[in-house]
Image (cartoon, rainbow, N blue to C red; front, side, top):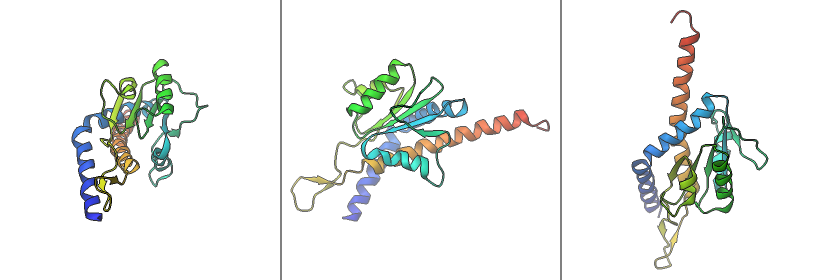
Amino acid sequence: MSKILTTQLTGVLQKIQQNEEDAIEETARLLAQAAIGQGTVYFACFGEMQGVAQNAQLSAEPMTKMALWTDDAVITEADRVCIFTRHANDAQALALAEQLYDAFIPFAAIASECADDNNKLSELAYTYVSLNLRGAILPHPTKLGARIVMPHLLVALFVYEAIKLSYDEMLAVDDEADDEIQSPFG
């Protein structure tokens, strides 16, 4: 079973790399705007996606200028928000998205569904990354046609790491530019 799981997960991750590469880069750029300026990057993660926020905050290499979003967070136009949710129709995620949209605060959203006209979250978001997951990925060994293994968090962590790679590159380039400007011996 583990070989099938590996094959299925590899296929999902490759599909994201092929279909969402530009959206991931745009999301990193959007979040870097806050980090390069005077803003904060807020992670609003719903359900099991809170694991992404924990990783971004507590890992060996935490995300620079990142904070956890809470209901009482005061978000300004200098800030950016990254919403992670299993489904684009999650009521809490949509409420936050509408609030940010109405306040003209650009935000990114990451969810399972593809971006289309029926996906309100993708319509509201400045950038949107699809996890390309419709449900479970492995056939159940005993139930004909049933599927098991819902890898939403695992796939979201992959997307987070892809975003962070580009984000860190952008911040490093900005730091190098600052060093050149400040150095009288350049």
